[in-house]
Length: 190
Length: 174
Image 1 (tube, rainbow over the protein chains, first blue to last red):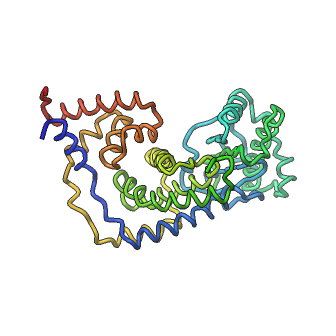
Image 2: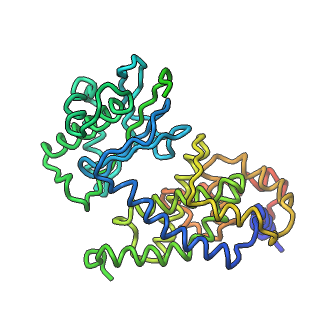
Image 3: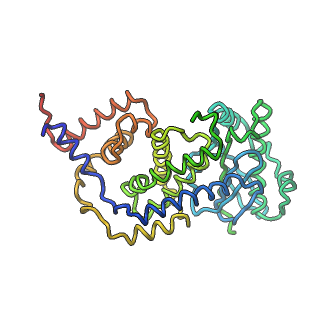
């Protein structure tokens, strides 16, 4: 065995051991594939904004115009790790929140870049229309949960309208425009 | 089939087929890199991300496999930055893995080599692991890491030189 072979052999053998993947596990993975498909539809194609709960951190995601889903994770959602444009706002209770637009993706890199360019040089906080979003989504403006969701909805709407103005047909599902937002409200208690 | 002639249903059927084949490898990929209890959740996250990006899934089987590993790598990087989520999708798989008796040889085999790999620059370490643990070609690993083949070749050779030095394996000129 020459030296190169010896190193290759050592590297090949260094893989951490794992349990073998038996028939039962394989069957479960097949089931998970379909369950994941259903779960991904629920997260992306929901047309009615929904807020599961308000905690100190609330994540929003939108795919296409007006589609939004919200979750209340114990930490930043996995897709919300990359920092993006941010601004602060106050909830009706007085708690201060930091909203961040994250994870902008689409099937056309030029569209993705157009969104990123726009939000990077735009003061979103000056454009957010919370009252309009509350009315459009029939939400109670006196509640922190509703207010939080309205901020996210308004940001997504602003971005979508700007992209339309720039000539992008963001209603075209094949473009697959999606973006996430996350509101972190350390003073919020419920 | 040409991508432009594929219907949504065709693409979904194709992705299902590829995912069913690749999922066991993805599970092992994660189990080699995170605590075993976390791996099923990362598999589930990878699957959901892939479904959300169905429109851009490669129609070629090998490319689709690399695409799924690329998603898995991003999911792993996010997890390593601190995000950990439990999903009910993975509950049954987690139970099955916890109950598994089918374990391969002891985990301390190769510990010294793994430590040396861990000390490499992250992207070089990824290349080494993908090639030697997941059995990919260097070109496939380059796809997963999203770098050019020539860059991958350069980093791979450099990484192996560093590993030779770290493991004190002398190079002989043949």
